[in-house]
Image 1 (cartoon, rainbow, N blue to C red):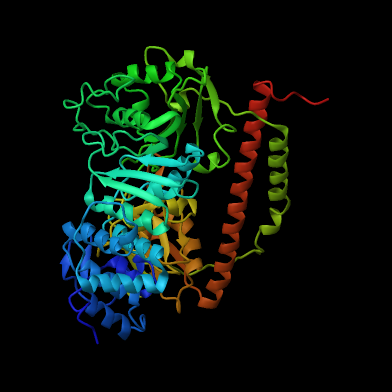
Image 2: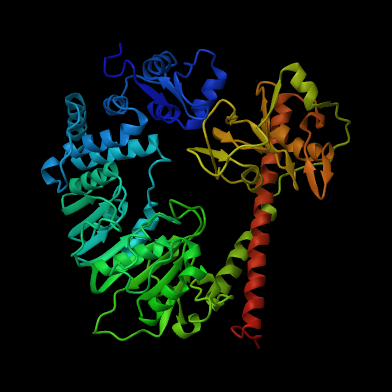
Length: 606
């Protein structure tokens, strides 16, 4: 029986996956395989919504759900009490009711009593802090494209770079991700946020952790809630490339100590705002778009930041580290000048993955003389100022040599046992097997979005490299899902690869899925023969093959004998992977020796 709280509730594919304890790809697969799976009752073709009551009934009938969890029942009650445009404001108010006595924020209307009771139940089961985080995470999962959250590793790095501080300010704090990270070592945090719902979310999340906090609504550039504050440190992720930041209204603002930010350089306005709100000697950490390092319109401000010794470091991060952009962002580390320290002669430049800075940037950064940066461009892009060749050390060289020795020592032992064969094998084609019903062949769409979305997608490159899914797409009926035992082949490739899947996964574009009747055909046997026969049946152009698997040939053999072939093919794959490791390690060793000899870091022995 369904209670009134969930009778009219709707759920997305991600919710269904969570209820059943499976991945989103499994839900897509159910929609394709089962005719009785509930039809969408709303949403869009790429993000359909289903009746929770119908889904719950179907899951029970399939034996995939015993009881709807109380947490999920509470969330669906809250989620379905407002439309999409009002949901953020409703959920943030529900979260705030759990910490009302600790909030230092303006007045807001309490949510309906049934929602308060549902939130109280969450808090009773998990504790207040976890209940607030549960509501926030569920909202982000539901509306991931409407919430700009800083990746956790980036937030942690920015907090470490800030250093010891008692008070911290984030003038555009969003849902409070940076301030939450700052709580680990700081006593007081202050925040401001334009979006009232996100401001309330930030206040609730931080207050649930217990420390003194104040988050205020409003635009910190146009209506600063903290005009007289002087904190120990500030950090923020400003909106990238925002033109309507208040250029006309703020032309003569006293915060522009380093120059009036150009109309198209809103990020430099936020940098100077943070500097104006920290005490002399206070540190500022800002996530910046890469263009801010070299745009001509901002070169005068960059030059002034260098001349005064305010800019201390620029760190290049990997692509995808900024919530607003897929381009590799930078972190600027700044210090408001004071009278006790002189102007430094260098700026630290660093570039690399986030984990490279776990022990600080001093060990991996490269000091660049400020005088070298003060040219016509004032380009602060780290990669342009870092040494082009990394130092070669003997311990690294020896370590690579030892690794190569381990790989080569057992290489021949990985070869499978094979013997001579003189019989003629009766052959068939995959097309004939498909007509007989022992093989299903399906090609994924030629065009799919693989850069964003909640569903992990296996791409053609992933198949070729033998790695897990790196693409991201939307859920929908056009998504083809591979199951364990299925064979996946790229349609266009320079090296025909047939990969037997070991787990369920959604497939990206330009892939062929082959599903065999395991009582008649062994998947590894089929995949092994397809690697060669599909290449022979493929058309080629510019060195790339367009695979036509239907013309591929394989022998007619009893399934037991197929399995013996399949085991040999599996051993060949292991050997092939080991050979690839030897080649990569050997190539790295060659590169290290050549670089060391050319750069004077190594010399011939003897």
